[in-house]
Amino acid sequence: MSNNPARIAIAFHSGYGHTARQAEAVAAGAASVPGAVADLVPLDELTEDVWARLAAADAIVFGAPTYMGSPSWVFKRFAEESVRAWADNLAWRDKIAAGFTNSKAMSGDKLNSLVDLAVFAAQHGMIWVGLDIYPGWAESTASIEDLNRLGSWLGAMAQSDADLSAEKAPPATDLRTAEALGVRVAVVTLRHLRGALAA
Ligand SMILES: Cc1cc2nc3c(=O)[nH]c(=O)nc-3n(C[C@H](O)[C@H](O)[C@H](O)COP(=O)(O)O)c2cc1C
Image (tube, rainbow, N blue to C red; front, top):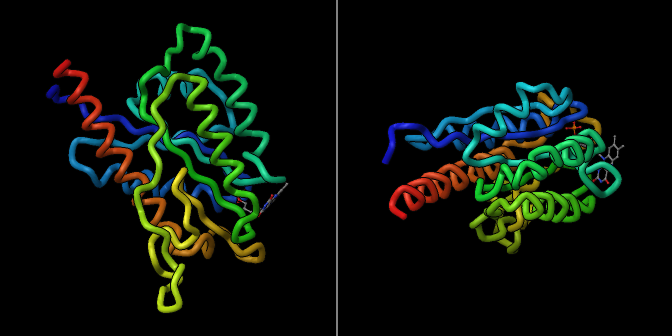
Protein backbone atom coordinates (compact mmCIF):
# COMPACT_ATOMS: atom_id res chain seq x y z
CA MET A 1 0.00 0.00 0.00
CA SER A 2 1.14 3.54 -0.64
CA ASN A 3 2.39 5.58 2.28
CA ASN A 4 -0.30 8.17 1.75
CA PRO A 5 -2.74 8.28 4.66
CA ALA A 6 -6.45 7.72 4.16
CA ARG A 7 -7.94 11.20 4.26
CA ILE A 8 -11.29 11.41 6.06
CA ALA A 9 -13.02 14.78 5.66
CA ILE A 10 -15.88 15.68 7.97
CA ALA A 11 -18.03 18.19 6.08
CA PHE A 12 -20.49 19.69 8.54
CA HIS A 13 -22.71 22.57 9.55
CA SER A 14 -23.65 23.52 13.09
CA GLY A 15 -25.78 26.54 13.93
CA TYR A 16 -25.10 26.68 17.67
CA GLY A 17 -22.16 24.31 18.22
CA HIS A 18 -23.90 21.08 19.21
CA THR A 19 -23.44 19.27 15.91
CA ALA A 20 -19.87 20.60 15.82
CA ARG A 21 -19.17 18.54 18.96
CA GLN A 22 -20.46 15.48 17.12
CA ALA A 23 -18.27 16.34 14.11
CA GLU A 24 -15.22 16.60 16.38
CA ALA A 25 -16.00 13.18 17.83
CA VAL A 26 -16.24 11.64 14.33
CA ALA A 27 -12.88 13.24 13.51
CA ALA A 28 -11.29 11.92 16.72
CA GLY A 29 -12.49 8.41 15.92
CA ALA A 30 -11.19 8.55 12.35
CA ALA A 31 -7.82 9.98 13.41
CA SER A 32 -7.40 7.23 16.04
CA VAL A 33 -7.05 4.63 13.27
CA PRO A 34 -3.40 4.14 12.22
CA GLY A 35 -2.94 5.24 8.63
CA ALA A 36 -5.87 7.67 8.64
CA VAL A 37 -6.02 11.44 9.07
CA ALA A 38 -9.11 13.56 9.72
CA ASP A 39 -9.97 16.98 8.31
CA LEU A 40 -12.83 18.98 9.86
CA VAL A 41 -14.43 21.10 7.12
CA PRO A 42 -17.07 23.61 8.29
CA LEU A 43 -19.52 24.49 5.53
CA ASP A 44 -20.51 28.01 6.65
CA GLU A 45 -18.39 29.58 3.90
CA LEU A 46 -17.94 27.67 0.67
CA THR A 47 -14.45 28.83 -0.26
CA GLU A 48 -12.20 27.24 -2.88
CA ASP A 49 -10.26 25.78 0.05
CA VAL A 50 -13.37 23.84 1.12
CA TRP A 51 -13.82 22.32 -2.35
CA ALA A 52 -10.10 21.50 -2.61
CA ARG A 53 -10.08 19.71 0.75
CA LEU A 54 -13.14 17.67 -0.21
CA ALA A 55 -11.62 16.82 -3.59
CA ALA A 56 -8.51 15.53 -1.82
CA ALA A 57 -10.47 13.35 0.62
CA ASP A 58 -10.84 9.58 0.28
CA ALA A 59 -13.97 9.67 2.45
CA ILE A 60 -16.42 12.44 3.32
CA VAL A 61 -18.62 12.19 6.40
CA PHE A 62 -21.54 14.60 6.04
CA GLY A 63 -23.10 16.14 9.14
CA ALA A 64 -25.87 18.64 9.85
CA PRO A 65 -28.32 19.47 12.59
CA THR A 66 -31.89 18.43 11.91
CA TYR A 67 -33.90 21.63 11.43
CA MET A 68 -37.59 21.28 10.60
CA GLY A 69 -37.13 17.59 9.93
CA SER A 70 -34.26 17.76 7.44
CA PRO A 71 -30.62 18.92 7.20
CA SER A 72 -30.16 22.65 7.89
CA TRP A 73 -30.37 25.06 4.93
CA VAL A 74 -26.67 25.84 5.22
CA PHE A 75 -25.97 22.17 4.55
CA LYS A 76 -28.53 22.12 1.73
CA ARG A 77 -26.84 25.14 0.14
CA PHE A 78 -23.58 23.18 0.20
CA ALA A 79 -25.35 20.15 -1.29
CA GLU A 80 -26.71 22.23 -4.16
CA GLU A 81 -23.41 23.98 -4.78
CA SER A 82 -21.69 20.59 -4.88
CA VAL A 83 -23.23 20.16 -8.33
CA ARG A 84 -19.88 21.53 -9.51
CA ALA A 85 -18.22 18.26 -8.41
CA TRP A 86 -21.16 16.23 -9.76
CA ALA A 87 -20.92 17.94 -13.16
CA ASP A 88 -17.17 17.28 -13.27
CA ASN A 89 -17.70 13.67 -14.37
CA LEU A 90 -18.81 12.67 -10.85
CA ALA A 91 -15.58 13.86 -9.25
CA TRP A 92 -16.55 12.32 -5.88
CA ARG A 93 -17.33 8.92 -7.44
CA ASP A 94 -16.20 5.97 -5.28
CA LYS A 95 -15.26 8.08 -2.27
CA ILE A 96 -16.56 6.53 0.94
CA ALA A 97 -19.47 8.46 2.50
CA ALA A 98 -21.27 8.42 5.84
CA GLY A 99 -23.41 10.79 7.85
CA PHE A 100 -24.54 12.08 11.21
CA THR A 101 -27.15 14.41 12.60
CA ASN A 102 -28.14 15.94 15.92
CA SER A 103 -31.40 17.41 17.19
CA LYS A 104 -33.24 18.17 20.40
CA ALA A 105 -35.95 15.49 20.37
CA MET A 106 -35.13 11.80 20.81
CA SER A 107 -36.51 11.16 17.35
CA GLY A 108 -37.04 14.69 16.05
CA ASP A 109 -37.28 13.13 12.57
CA LYS A 110 -33.51 12.71 12.47
CA LEU A 111 -33.86 9.65 10.22
CA ASN A 112 -35.18 11.90 7.47
CA SER A 113 -31.96 13.93 7.62
CA LEU A 114 -29.81 10.80 7.36
CA VAL A 115 -31.85 9.59 4.38
CA ASP A 116 -31.26 12.99 2.78
CA LEU A 117 -27.51 12.70 3.34
CA ALA A 118 -27.41 9.14 1.96
CA VAL A 119 -29.35 10.09 -1.18
CA PHE A 120 -27.03 13.07 -1.64
CA ALA A 121 -24.00 10.76 -1.43
CA ALA A 122 -25.60 8.31 -3.87
CA GLN A 123 -26.18 11.10 -6.39
CA HIS A 124 -22.44 11.75 -6.26
CA GLY A 125 -21.68 8.05 -6.90
CA MET A 126 -20.21 7.67 -3.42
CA ILE A 127 -20.22 4.47 -1.33
CA TRP A 128 -22.33 4.84 1.82
CA VAL A 129 -21.19 3.28 5.09
CA GLY A 130 -23.65 2.92 7.97
CA LEU A 131 -23.22 2.21 11.63
CA ASP A 132 -22.47 -1.42 12.57
CA ILE A 133 -23.64 -1.27 16.19
CA TYR A 134 -26.60 -3.06 17.79
CA PRO A 135 -29.17 -0.66 19.26
CA GLY A 136 -28.34 0.36 22.81
CA TRP A 137 -30.68 1.44 25.62
CA ALA A 138 -33.33 -0.87 24.22
CA GLU A 139 -33.82 -3.45 26.97
CA SER A 140 -35.07 -3.12 30.55
CA THR A 141 -31.54 -3.63 31.88
CA ALA A 142 -29.87 -1.46 29.24
CA SER A 143 -28.19 1.87 29.90
CA ILE A 144 -28.42 5.33 28.41
CA GLU A 145 -24.62 5.08 28.23
CA ASP A 146 -24.85 2.27 25.65
CA LEU A 147 -23.31 2.88 22.25
CA ASN A 148 -25.96 3.73 19.64
CA ARG A 149 -28.54 4.49 22.34
CA LEU A 150 -30.77 6.12 19.72
CA GLY A 151 -30.76 2.94 17.62
CA SER A 152 -29.72 4.21 14.20
CA TRP A 153 -27.97 2.26 11.45
CA LEU A 154 -27.97 4.63 8.50
CA GLY A 155 -25.68 7.00 10.38
CA ALA A 156 -24.87 8.40 13.81
CA MET A 157 -27.54 10.27 15.75
CA ALA A 158 -27.13 12.59 18.71
CA GLN A 159 -29.68 14.35 20.91
CA SER A 160 -29.06 17.68 22.60
CA ASP A 161 -31.38 18.98 25.31
CA ALA A 162 -32.67 22.31 24.04
CA ASP A 163 -31.71 24.27 27.18
CA LEU A 164 -28.08 23.08 27.26
CA SER A 165 -25.15 24.82 25.59
CA ALA A 166 -22.77 22.98 23.29
CA GLU A 167 -20.39 22.51 26.23
CA LYS A 168 -22.96 20.19 27.83
CA ALA A 169 -24.80 18.65 24.89
CA PRO A 170 -24.89 16.31 23.12
CA PRO A 171 -24.04 13.90 25.96
CA ALA A 172 -20.88 11.79 26.06
CA THR A 173 -22.84 8.68 25.15
CA ASP A 174 -23.76 10.15 21.74
CA LEU A 175 -20.25 11.49 21.20
CA ARG A 176 -18.90 7.95 21.72
CA THR A 177 -21.29 6.71 19.04
CA ALA A 178 -20.07 9.46 16.70
CA GLU A 179 -16.49 8.44 17.45
CA ALA A 180 -17.35 4.83 16.57
CA LEU A 181 -18.67 6.00 13.20
CA GLY A 182 -15.38 7.80 12.59
CA VAL A 183 -13.42 4.63 13.38
CA ARG A 184 -15.61 2.57 11.06
CA VAL A 185 -15.30 5.01 8.18
CA ALA A 186 -11.51 5.10 8.53
CA VAL A 187 -11.20 1.30 8.64
CA VAL A 188 -13.50 0.82 5.63
CA THR A 189 -11.67 3.57 3.70
CA LEU A 190 -8.31 1.93 4.31
CA ARG A 191 -9.69 -1.40 3.07
CA HIS A 192 -11.18 0.33 0.04
CA LEU A 193 -7.87 2.01 -0.83
CA ARG A 194 -5.96 -1.26 -0.44
CA GLY A 195 -8.49 -2.99 -2.71
CA ALA A 196 -8.10 -0.29 -5.33
CA LEU A 197 -4.32 -0.77 -5.30
CA ALA A 198 -4.68 -4.56 -5.69
CA ALA A 199 -7.14 -4.29 -8.60
C1 LIG B 1 -34.90 26.20 12.81
C2 LIG B 1 -34.76 25.03 13.74
C3 LIG B 1 -35.47 23.88 13.46
C4 LIG B 1 -35.35 22.76 14.30
N1 LIG B 1 -36.02 21.61 13.97
C5 LIG B 1 -35.88 20.52 14.76
C6 LIG B 1 -36.50 19.29 14.39
O1 LIG B 1 -37.11 19.15 13.34
N2 LIG B 1 -36.36 18.25 15.26
C7 LIG B 1 -35.68 18.36 16.44
O2 LIG B 1 -35.66 17.39 17.19
N3 LIG B 1 -35.02 19.50 16.76
C8 LIG B 1 -35.10 20.56 15.95
N4 LIG B 1 -34.41 21.71 16.25
C9 LIG B 1 -33.48 21.71 17.38
C10 LIG B 1 -32.02 21.52 16.91
O3 LIG B 1 -31.89 20.40 16.07
C11 LIG B 1 -31.11 21.34 18.12
O4 LIG B 1 -31.18 22.50 18.93
C12 LIG B 1 -29.67 21.05 17.75
O5 LIG B 1 -28.95 20.67 18.91
C13 LIG B 1 -28.99 22.26 17.10
O6 LIG B 1 -27.72 21.87 16.68
P1 LIG B 1 -26.60 22.95 16.35
O7 LIG B 1 -26.23 23.61 17.67
O8 LIG B 1 -25.46 22.19 15.78
O9 LIG B 1 -27.20 23.91 15.38
C14 LIG B 1 -34.53 22.82 15.44
C15 LIG B 1 -33.81 24.01 15.71
C16 LIG B 1 -33.93 25.10 14.87
C17 LIG B 1 -33.11 26.34 15.15
